[in-house]
Image 1 (cartoon, rainbow, N blue to C red):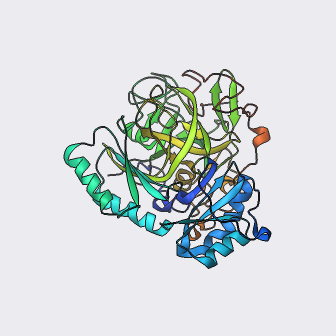
Image 2 (image 1 turned 60 degrees about the vertical axis):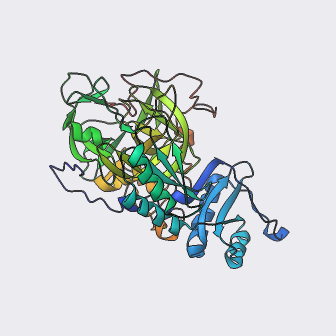
Image 3 (image 1 turned 60 degrees about the horizontal axis):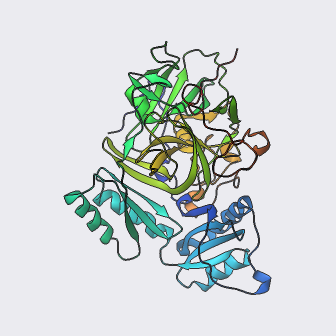
Length: 445
């Protein structure tokens, strides 16, 4: 069952189960796939930035109906590729006239969503996870090393029942678990976690987000092992429709900076919350392993932890280890994307890692990033209005993009290095513990 601790007020979890359904069919930078159709020169695909592609798809999404099979941004060709089910001449024409590439696929977003619901009914065994993979137009099902014998047979039978070409199974060498342990960073009840992002609640109190399984583990948290508490959990959700917790600072005068501490005196300013996109470059900061980078590989993921099933998560290939739970996942431009939940593997061997979408958590607890500037209106891919200030324009109903494009504002303020690749923030190494706790408790005045 889900644990929800709400001593002061009851927040409504609005639309958490639906978050990511439309966005699960979006693939943005660093993806490649075959494309079809030359078309009339007057309808040649336009060269677009990722942000422009997001805006174009927002306009197209609601027009395709059941023919919509997802979309992604081909960064190499700077083109928006829109998947169209079957040979729908009218939809193909609409896509091409808009300046995108029409690509024929087998499965619609609607059918893929229905298939994930079937898996939830038939195969919710510990050690499994699944998400929609728009690159292959299938559901990617992952089973960890504990899924053997009857549990493997159950999973395989459930996948086979979906029909050919709907889903595939991948075996993971690790074991899915929540990344929490005793140690240092932010501490509560003998557990160590990482602070995610500082926020302001709807009644003006300063606070921060962390993982829900951390909030369930302890009610009060300190920034020093054995130290006095600095914050109290107001709400914690885990397992169930997410893995997030809101902690408010005990001192109402706390000035909590909207930034992530990268260690070595470096930090990145966090400007807004934004939705994740498959193929997107992201960075994660945690108290155990410091700074790591990678890509988003799936959205609206379902993970069956030993403690129970968690839905609506972001799947990535960014490494993490125990103690990194709750830590910040963010972009080079300073968009808050996720909170570290759990996964398999470590930062030596790699593995799959899952994150709580920040937009969903903010909407659920009624908080805003930093001082609160309605980041959802400016940022990222919207998928149903579960944004950080109750914004969003029901994009999930149309399978499109939310109401602000790819959220590129703030790059000039980001504090992130000089555009290097592979997670090099000015070429420096990650911080090591202490201040490097994914958002850092920064108190001024």
